[in-house]
Length: 246
Ligand code: ADP
Ligand code: MG
Image 1 (spheres, protein in one colour):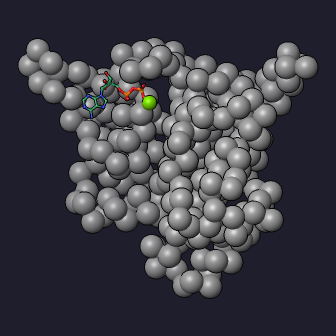
Image 2 (cartoon, rainbow, N blue to C red):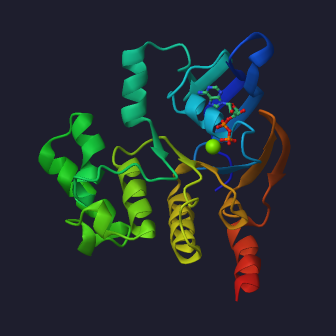
């Protein structure tokens, strides 16, 4: 699916840390338009501002300047309560280190955001079981994270991210802690989500993951320095890469 109506936009987005001599401009005047159903990949060296940018997009952190618009509504200037609500229901996160609750089972982890958003326990559980089933984890739903492989944990984290049917899923190096086989697993999962029309923004060092995107941005020193539109869809690119793997 090509870029649909814009769902997430930034204008002149900026984030500074420190001040005076020690000032670091982690995000430097970023203008981004992400269409509904689009998958966008962001690549760049360590320290170039990728995580900071995702934090700003997801309302986890506030910009020093500029705007973030979700569905044409500014979110950068919202109060803490409204922002928390957006983090619960509209935008969700997948982290490199999964961030699962170790004392909760897979299904309990997945249903947690729905419960926090006020869904009934039954509805939350039903949706969580469904998601785990779709992600190939039906037999693992009563397992604790410690009993799952890295790839399975990341799939649980993705299921959790989908729990409240978010407008946008942000993923920060989601395969950074995974071996090659698990990376391919997660890659297929993102492709599938893309196919379903889920809007995705993925920060990655993995060219195979980036190749699943509609567009890829290269980031340096807080700014986008290059944009690649991955024409021909993902299958061509992936086909080529899969060929290299074998
Ligand atoms: P990336 O995710 O691309 O590795 P980050 O967004 O984590 O980059 O960091 C961008 C820059 O901002 C780096 O120079 C980093 O040291 C700095 N930075 C990130 N978070 C903070 C913070 N909380 N306080 C001060 N500096 C920070
Ligand atoms: Mg980072």
